[in-house]
Picture 1 (cartoon, rainbow, N blue to C red):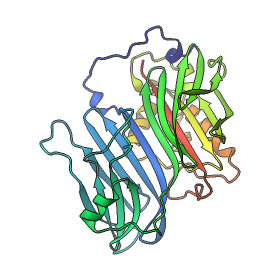
Picture 2: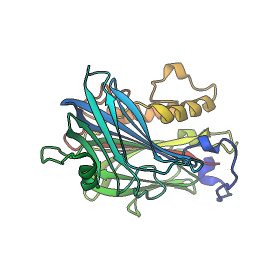
Picture 3: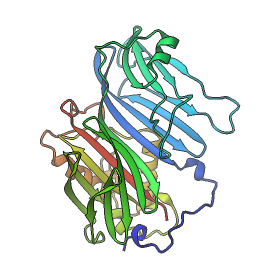
Picture 4: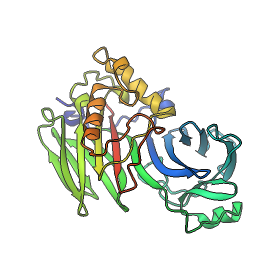
Length: 338
C-alpha cells in the first residue's frame, strides 16, 4: 500500500521541530541557454525557500557560483534591497561580469520559491546586457544604465526541476512552448491524478501495481510525454514522519526534451540526505550523481532514452542544445509528508 495515498489521517502536522529550519518549503532549479561574455553558456538558477530564509543561487559550470538573499532572515536587522555584484569568471581570464537584482516587490504565488512578477535578475558584460529575467527593466535601466536591445532574445528555458512538499497533492507550474500552465499531481484512493489548469488530464488507477509508467497527454493541443515513478512511495516502510523518507518522480517532456542540470548546493544536500534514508537496498556508488535512488535512476534513464536526440542528465557543462527547437522538460520531485 502507498501510505501517502491510503493514510486515514489527512491533516498536516503543525508541530515545529528544531530541524525544520533546514527543511525546504520549496526548491526550484531552472537551466537557461544563454551567453556569458559572448560565449555560449548554460546558466542554472536555484530558488530555495525555507521557513527562515529565501535565497537564489546562480551557477555556471566552470565559471562562477553566487548566492543572493532574496528575503533576509526574520531575525536580521537588514531589510531587502536591490543590489549588484561584480564577478570574475574562472573560465575566462580577466573577464568580469556584473550581476544585478531587485526582489524588493517580488510576487511569489502558491508559496513558490520562484517569483512570478515584479522582479529582475540580469547579467552584463562590458556594460552590455547579456541575460535578463523579470519584468522591471525600467528600474534596471535607471539603476545601471543598461538598455534592453532587440538583439537580446528572451533566455531559452531548457528545463525546470522542482521539489514540492505535501501529503496527497502537489502543485507546480510550467511554460510549454510559451504558454504558462498550472500542473497538479494528486495521490488519492490508490490512484494518481494529473491536472492541467485544474482539469483532469490523466488518471492512473491501481497505483500500487502501476507505480511506474508513461502516457501521452495534450496541453492546449501540445503533445506532452508524462513519466511517473512512485516506487519509493510503494516501498516506503519508514513511517517516521520525516518528509525525506520517500518521494515520487514525475517528468513532463515536450518535443525533444530539455536538459537536466547537475544538482548543487542545497538541492544536492537534500538528495544526499534522502539517499542515506533509503537504506541498504540502494548502492550509492553505483548510481549517477543526479540519481539518488533506484527509482529516480530508472525514470530519468527511461525519459532520456525516449528522446531521439539524447541529452546529458549529469552536468550542465556537458549538455547539448536541447531547447533551441522548443524542447523542454519539467522534472517534479514530490516529497510526501507522513
